[in-house]
Length: 176
Image 1 (tube, rainbow, N blue to C red):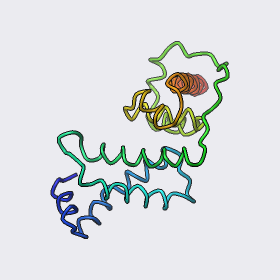
Image 2: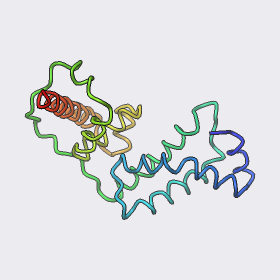
Image 3: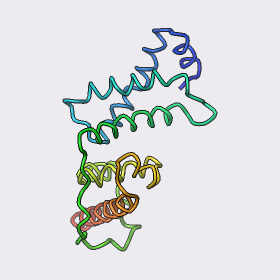
Image 4: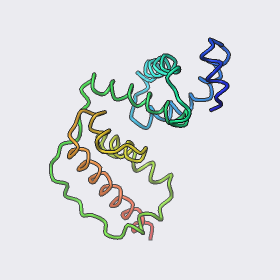
């Protein structure tokens, strides 16, 4: 993101606001979809995210993080605030019975697009924590966002990874 667009926005330039919106909209829609925001609330969620971003734009410091990372954090904060408001529930902590795939190298050979489809099929709690983890958030941040304990975050991530490994291995062996 060009700093000049941000500066123009801070000066109240409406065209710059529109340009910033147009450049970031596909990413924010992707982010909302990734965290399971339904079509019926997507427009409202986008409006809230952009409102939060434009209000906080004066606090953005390009020396601390690239714009898209800063904006992603604003989007995630809004998404998780919505989860807390709507009593988002995590998957129960019952013992996970599927066997752990031992050969991680085999799982790594699967194309990324297939993995993305498998991630979409995870239970929402597993998927949310897996996505946050791959977005670079640690268990402290995840637990704060979702209002869960760090141990719940860790166990849900471990279970999500186990499910993915096993699904990948099933795909691999069924293709042979």
